[in-house]
Amino acid sequence: MITVLEREGLEIKIAPDAPIVMIGEKINPTGHRKLSEALEQRNFDYIRELAQRQIDSGAHILDVNASIPGADEARLLPEVVKIVAEQAAVPLCIDSNSADALEAALKVCPGKPLVNSVNGEKAKLERVLPLVRDRGAAVIGLTMDDSGIPGTAEKRLEIAQLILDRAVKIGIAAEDVVIDPLVLTVGADQQAALVTLQTIRAVRERLGVNINLGASNVSFGLPERQTINQAFLALSFSAGASCVITDPARLAGTILACDLLLGRDPYGKRFLIHVRKTRQAG
Amino acid sequence: MITVLEREGLEIKIAPDAPIVMIGEKINPTGHRKLSEALEQRNFDYIRELAQRQIDSGAHILDVNASIPGADEARLLPEVVKIVAEQAAVPLCIDSNSADALEAALKVCPGKPLVNSVNGEKAKLERVLPLVRDRGAAVIGLTMDDSGIPGTAEKRLEIAQLILDRAVKIGIAAEDVVIDPLVLTVGADQQAALVTLQTIRAVRERLGVNINLGASNVSFGLPERQTINQAFLALSFSAGASCVITDPARLAGTILACDLLLGRDPYGKRFLIHVRKTRQAG
Image (tube, rainbow over all chains, first blue to last red; front, side, top):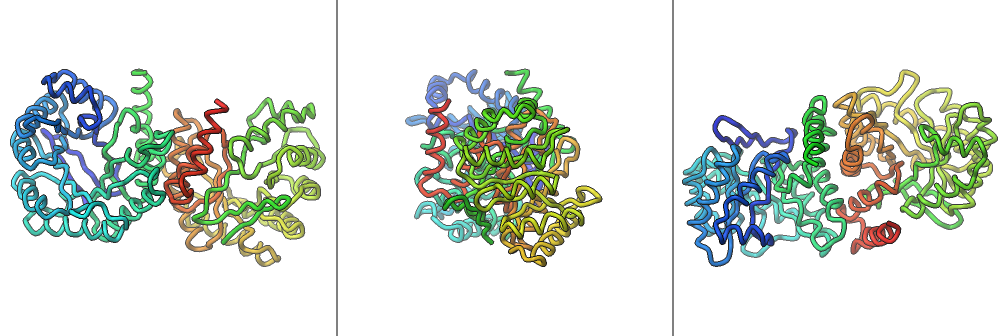
């Protein structure tokens, strides 16, 4: 299945066996003090800078999260979405736990965005999926529910199936549902990455929808995180992930190398252009 | 199937889903002027140094190749094998195109070594396989023959099948045949890595034998070779390779990260010990 996102004539296609789509993760204040302060002070220059830097590093889509303690997210998120959309002419991925904030942000967001995220929690599905449908957006579904993140691929597949069924039932096209199988750190559980890789394979084979991955949790608390993250990305693409939320400045090289190795980059053109740009910048 | 190599009670097991076995590639004068000169001058200190460095970086087996122009390889290779065996108490991988040199080196090599390599050429199979059998060694079979390296996975699988059949027919156990599906640079052919990955899958599924890979050719002539090689290793392990000829100083981190992510390193113990050693050395 092909998930198509759109912005003023620019289409970004997420598809199995197509080049990996990179969602820039940096506009998210969680654990990012400088951005938290910028959001508190409505210092939008820093946000513009983060947007531009990620585009320069190869991001195809930008994630936008404006969740800071004490702020009225339903007012702040649309403001930030507008700023980022002005700076970067790419589709956005609107990221919030608050349905009110998502609703408000979807009203001002241009093009066809991604909504990040729903999960298997019933209340969440009931409230957010209609917003996605009414706006004609696509949605990321996380394989967790009220009981947390299951420890087996079978249970995660069940939640993915539930999210997909609910979405389709209310009128969202199956290709507009992207499943995120979630990954926990292998520092705490040596089976953590393996369960995620098994979930990717199962969702790809059984449901056929596209799969997104947040790639940096896997190495939390461990040394040499970059090496672990690089290896995990390649293993995930081999299993069938087609989209990744990541820091393109750190991981675009590995992602483009995987596209090249998997025969998805004719003449290595994208890889070579990336290397040239990075070297000029460095 | 499990390929067991042995040296004075130390067993190295190559097996699917087991930790990846690393064969140190550095004792090979091809394109390595300093080693060529050391071999010409019988400067064995440098060879001892190369052996030790690779063991310190995590090599489980050491490849030994002494092929320099004008030298009598059937005299030189056994000498070098003895030096390396003295320095490093691990199984060796005896590497030569000359059957006479292999024969002479096998006589002085301790333990149960690997022989690198035969391929689908009839003359080679007829001359080298009996040496492997008589010595009780294991052998690496390259998927090429008199016509060169086939461009498709099906043809490479056919050659692998031929090598395996011939080996078994003369009395070598199937588990003592390790297939190397070969990889060419993606710089020249964008399908090159993909054909190798398909061959790995096909050999693993259809023949069930272990698969070795030389991991650095894939990036020849390209920039950012380390990034490409790291990505290719992870993709190869995901496809089913269980052994790799590589420079452990450069790639052991990625290999151990893959073991960790694939659930083959309880508590991340091997990965963490490697990081600690590398940091102390650096």
